Image 1: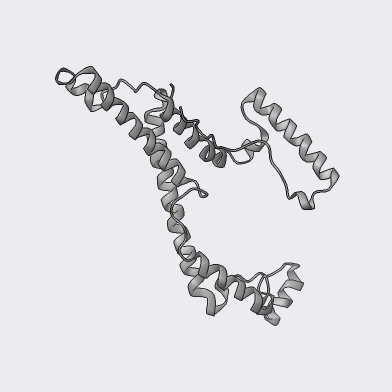
Image 2: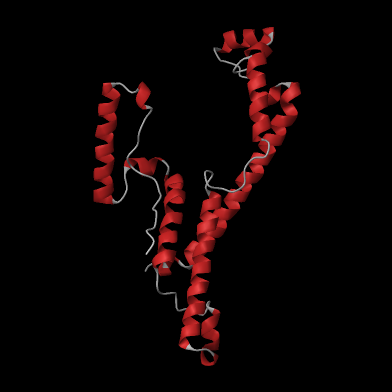
Length: 213
């Protein structure tokens, strides 16, 4: 049987080892031991709590995939068409259809949770390359935070309020169009991901008591 490759969020983390001194390394090891102990004792660790949404979307598709590939049963509910025509099909055909329906449901949940995850979503911002190129041009021309766009009035206001005025890509007229296109597309992607999340949880809630093998 093919071995299933498990993926998810590990409590063991690494830093940039080239910049890590001995004190950083000792601290990292100490925290990793703490996280491993917490996972073993409680089933979760502090790193999971820092971003529960990210942890869930990273872990759940892998769990559902393993359930799909290992389960040899399916829910016995009226939602499965095979049971509505029990008298006209053999038990083998009913079970085959039932398993296929259950696999389809699990596959849909897996797909939707993956689409809800920013890292695994199939939709990417088509303006990202142009945006990054424009950002590099903006920084070369105006500085990292648009320092060269500041007016004398801005500088006086900074002194009076002890604040720091920051200009972004869209504040420069020649870059406003690409900035608007990029962020409008980003909003559309975020809306799509949110819709996938909602659809996934509708299925997850409906079949919650059947997610076992």
